Length: 311
Image 1 (tube, rainbow, N blue to C red):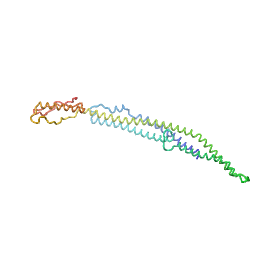
Image 2 (cartoon, rainbow, N blue to C red):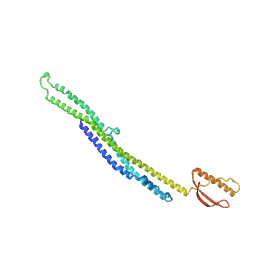
Image 3 (cartoon, rainbow, N blue to C red):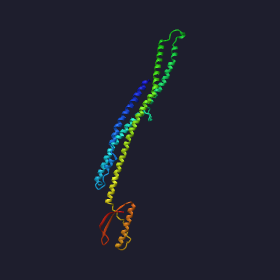
Image 4 (cartoon, helix red, strand yellow):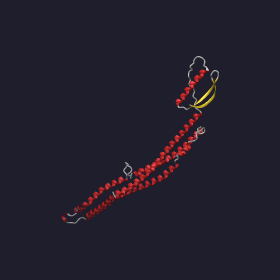
């Protein structure tokens, strides 16, 4: 375990990731936002395309088919833009996940490189404690190699080995101490860089989200214009050719005996009044009035007048 492991982690899992994600986010923002905005049809353009004059031609079968084709073309255009926008959102979400492992802006269950480095440093701190013990124990190690009764010399190999161990321990302690002193500021620096990239991605993603929402609104607007067109055409056809309302079969009040002209006129006026009341109650504001000619047997022989009246 050494500072080299931490350097490798910083280089491969932090510095390289920040650089890559930042560049890809910048490219995605420049490529997608301007392209998507330019391709979106404006509401005014859609209104111009889907609000023809309401007349017999536009409301004919051919006119309605043309309206449907135009609406489908606009929807297809929006669907293609929507597909690109959602692909961009998917890419931005992937970049968010990558930078989120370093950034402090989001909590991700998976331990990121910052946590891994801190785990390494924790284990290195334990090693430092061991090395400090080696340095502290060095005099005792040397004393234990003195010959019994003071006769003889200290083993040269033991002295060399002990001194080398002390020097290595001191070197490692110095290396790790410098690393621990500089590491917190270094990690904070990279976290700040990751936070900046995360904010940049968020801005781009929010812009693409707004475009997706605008696409949804435009699709609904197209549907509204289609329904409005159908409603206006239906009203036009109803005015020009109102439905025929046949009077109900009502038994005559004179089951026995012949009908007179006065009887027919009286009964007709009553039926006419009842029909008008029914139409008004139903919410209709127009009706067809037909005037018939009758023969001597009071049978209808022809229409003399057919007209649309306001009720």
